[in-house]
Image (cartoon, rainbow, N blue to C red):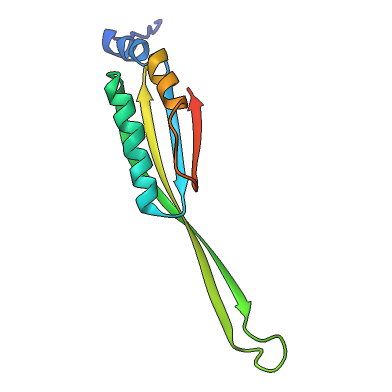
Length: 119
């Protein structure tokens, strides 16, 4: 007996629908600035009728540093500092050239890091 695999029309249709996708990761130290820049990206993408998924909040990266207050006498007293890096993820499906051009011309505030990948 020979087994045959059947591919459904829905499975092949889903593969054909999503041809390309922009994955944008936005990082910042302050969440208010981050949310404002994410809103600006989403507004620009929806202006040109692009399908936007997100913003998806990713886990906040916390870096902690412990420092001695005094190097000699009070060696047991220490201070702790932390840096929080807030992250968001945005997916744009089937971006048109106008969407990509308008996203490259956006001016973002300082302190906001943007990584764009074409998938």
